[in-house]
Amino acid sequence: MMTQSVLYFLQTEGNKIIRLDLQDFSQTVIMGPVPGMLDGIVADTGNRVIYWTNMGDAPFTKKDGAVGCCGLRGENPQLLIPPGVFMTGKQLFLHHSRQELYWCDREGGAVMRCTTKGENIQTIVSRRSAGSTVADIADQCVGIAVDTFNNDLYWTQKGASKGGQGRIFRLSLDKFSDGNEMNEADMSVLLSGLPEPIDLSLDLQNGRLYWTDRGAPPDGNSLNVADFNESGLHNHRVIARGFREAIGLAMNTDDDLAYVADLSGCIYKVNLSDGRKKVIYQQGAITGIALARE
Image: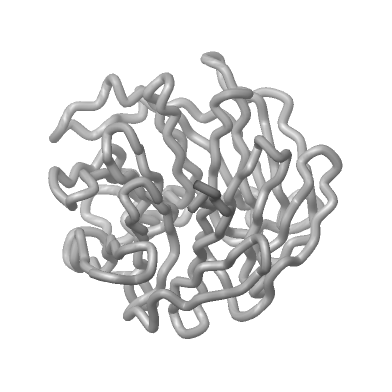
């Protein structure tokens, strides 16, 4: 059976989920408008399901975030986790073999997971101070990825806007047990002083971590990569610059490509070897994107 590459992405203008065919660049709105503000998205084409996170409503101070799902063409939409559990759903990661979803709760200062049925909701990391309603800006979690080979969790804390306070963290999920949130001693800061790191993507075959950064130039509003091993991140380099509030990230390392979305409404195709980028879509602000083969 012939397969084709598609991007599923979240457009905040109209709060839509859109499918973009990467062969003819035709677009199909598969859902919208959706209440709240959509942010993270993953596609499980094997099971024909799309999952997304919802940030809830601004100013993001209430537990009105959510996790939802639907079929690849928008059929059978449902909320796996309705409002009332967490605050601000950000990037979403699907652990295919375990059928688990991992996401960051920005204002809640947390990293969470559940099954793809919305069961067994767990808080792995809590960065919010006791007694506070919203996590300090330096402790707000945004981007997430799981090393499914080594069972390690990576996440970003972006810090203040254009603040140069961004950090990338890692912890071993082998040390986590339900009801026992990870403490500071379990977490490793792999990089710090970054402009404003956002979404993450791991290339496990080649030992590389990619991320978008929406911070101030010259190193912000960029696509970045670093090599990773058990001792940390090494050889950080900027692949491409000149995005406008870069957020969403989807990788096709087999073809040496990345796709980056930004709040200007652009989706870029980026050549990883030389950093050349080309706009392949532009309309409305875009948050999360997911690459799939259908």
